[in-house]
Structure formats: C-alpha cells, structure tokens
Image (cartoon, rainbow, N blue to C red):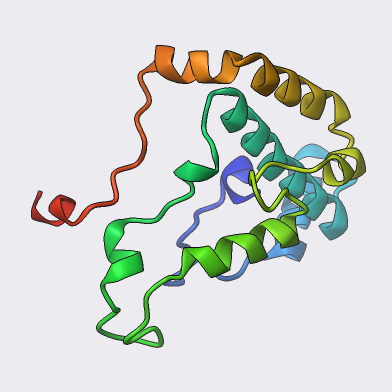
Length: 156
C-alpha cells in the first residue's frame, strides 16, 4: 500500500522493513474521511498485490520471470548481516507463494485467496486469458523479453 498512499519507501530506514500501519490508516482517515482501519488497509494491500499478479499473468509474465539479479543468487554478500550469503530462490519462492495463497507451480493467485479478497471475476478473466493463449500473444506484441540474469550485466 505504500505506493498507493504516496508514502516514501525509504523514509528514514535503509530497507522498507516496516510500514507504519496505524499512522497510515489515520492519515487516510484524516485526508479522506474514509473509515480506514489497519486491518482494512492490509486487506487493500493484499488485493493490490493479487491484482498485480493477475494483471502480469494476463500480459504473459510467468513464474519463469520471478528472478533476481545474477549477483543476488550467485555472488555471496560481502558485508552486513547477509555476509557470505546468497538468495536461494528455489527455497524462498515456494514459501512466498504459500504465504500469499498462490499456486506453487505457477505462482498465480489461487481460487481461495481470490475469493477471500472478492476478486473472483478477476481470477476468471486471468484464467480465460491464460487458457486462450491471449496472454502469450500480448507478451509477444509488447516486445517483452525474459529478465537477463547472467554475469555479463556486471560489466555494463
């Protein structure tokens, strides 16, 4: 919800590790008069994430596009708490998908989470677009290409 509320992602911290839920909800209430609670704000954020995933899928973005820059997965960090570590997406992504309620094989929002969020129609549209092949046609038409993850990028 940070992008949607106009808040600064790096407002005083190195990493966006915390969201000031209570303060954000209060600011929205004050600015708009909406009945905004922390719980409602979190639900809105969850809806946003799932809608983004559906939208991306409808435009040909697949599980194969869930990558990180080459260095994150191959070159150990040289400092900080992560010193000596690399990201293991093969372990991390299934956990992330499970937490989101997404299909482990495809990385797409599952029926249960879409139903919980009131996004059944969006899920049906996504599934229809995927099964018709239209999503791949859109992907090709837009000129997307898979993310580059090789070491040559480091020399650019």
